[in-house]
Amino acid sequence: MKRFEKVVPADNARLPGMHTVMADLSDRARVNYFPDIEYVCRDGQPLCLQLLLPYNLFPESPCSRQIPLVVYVQGAAWGEQDVYRGLPTLAEIAKRGYAVASVKHRAAQTAGFPAFLQDVKSAIRFLRANAVKYCIDPDEVAIWGDSSGGHAALMVGVTGDFEEFKTEDNREFSDAVSAVVDFYGPTDAAQINNKPRNPVFLEDKSNIPEDILFGGCVAEHPEIAQPGNPINYVSPDRKLPPMFIAHGDSDAMVPFDQSVLMARKLQECDQMVEFYKVCGADHGIFFWTDELLEKVDRFLRGTLGR
Image 1 (cartoon, one colour):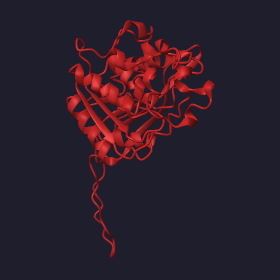
Image 2: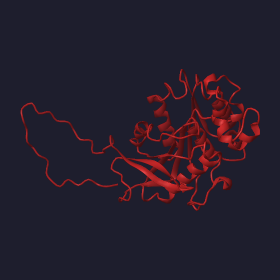
Image 3: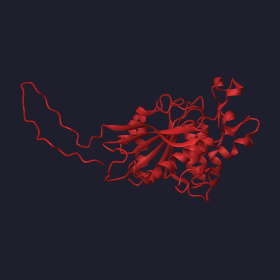
Image 4: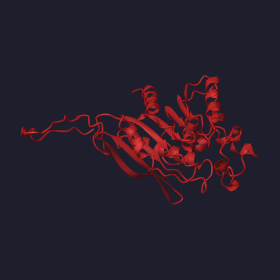
């Protein structure tokens, strides 16, 4: 972290009617944004992440301390993400002392399962490989996502360092994480239609997100989705990272029951999970409250050892 050195004395001038306010020497209200950092190239297509660093941290500057990393996956039904849309909210997280990296992955329309998972894991390994450059503590890494990004976060959490999902880039580094935050992500695609959904999401049979991801009709062939259902990787004989799950009880796209299934399985297998129902919230609508973000921050501080 750069240290500020005062090079001129404070000006003591006073004018009638002049007001004064005190500086915040922590500089906590400021976040530095470093756009479009390429973390891997797939088939000639660069994949980039957006990096937010708190206070006065800059890449490749001398750092007196390394800070926890939150890798964020923006939901987009596993399709083309708008990784810039959520940056104002993520900046609020960075202000709390985290490095935040919003990761763009390949869209399911051009690369089906497990492409998105391979990409997010590649981003984690890239950031660990460059931990000193970005002032990151490689031992304090969390994954967070919403909707399909929540599903990605869960999949990363339950498949840490699984060889079948690891690509060659930076493979000497781990893609396991210490904490998972899932906002309204699918957990079992084979059961996603067991509860009511808005019919508009199912009208176009050629455009159902889970069918595009897994390359077939999941409702008719649930077996094709099994490798991509995070619930299937939960068992009592594997120690998983602590998980924070939150879901709106009026979610019309991903039924609330999807998180109930996951939280129940984690509890039955004696895994650590915090589960929150956001009463009155739809799919990301009326969901992002200050209270909920405070709870996420408390969870991360507890699990990342801060």
